[in-house]
Image (cartoon, rainbow, N blue to C red; front, side, top):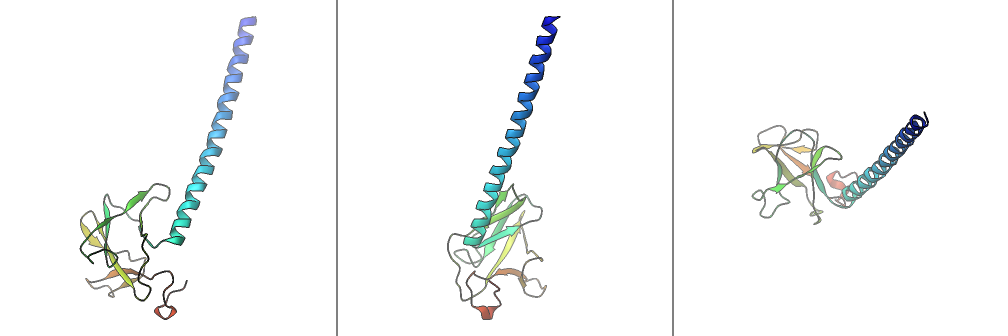
Length: 142
């Protein structure tokens, strides 16, 4: 009889410890995720970036930010935290003009219609971004 009480107590303690470990892991994972997300938001404030939020296995960007222009493709990295492809540019963009670009998704050239576009829906439609500190006459709202 005594042995079954000890066994019951041991199982109870093991279950309590496992629940405590699971709670601690959940709290730590949440804090780490929030810290990673804060770093991502800081990067987006400090550096120009392009994001592709649609499906695709390989995503590249090509445009006026590459050297030589419209020739070299830059691969976007998958961000599992947000579920998008993203690329941050360390070099500042020319503040006096627009920076046009296109995405190359699985070998096909395409643009994101939810972002600012030039070309009016023709076959030469491209996305563009304004530098962070661009001239207000260009329409920048920063």
